[in-house]
Length: 224
Image 1: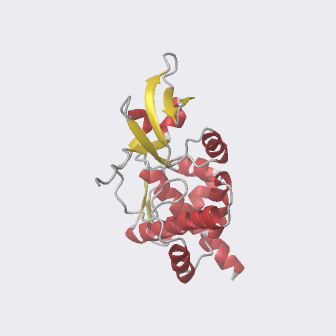
Image 2: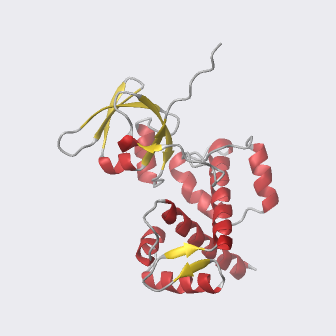
């Protein structure tokens, strides 16, 4: 059973990674997967052959990698469990946001369907993980990249695409996490960095970081 569980976890890790990389619109390559998973390209090649044999991906050596309908279903299932696990860790256990992603990576493979349902109910059926990603992986995305946000108009940070501990800690220290209202006031003349105003404070963030932040328009208050 432990060996079977480990193999299942590895398969799910690859399916999740393929889905995440494909969602960026840049396509999925062996090199990209190796970098994303911090493994050797040779290890990726071996797993891709196995996933193809299982009917979970379409794959040709040196070609693009895609999920089959069954592979996509399984990938979305593990991503949902991951995001629910993040909410559990953050909301009920008080785990710091910069640690929840790594901890959730361990939990996502162990949650049974029954426990997954119980967690969602206990949390009040949350719509998004602490980083802002929708629990429902088929939810429509109405966000835009911070780089494309209109200047001088308030927007709300909706999602952090980069969940690395260093980035999350930095944004937490700047109080620029999902839910924060920010206004783009300008760009740095030399490197194009974004100049933001949030809660009366001025912030400057680099182009690379800004590209990983998704924002949305503030919700209008209901009329009395």
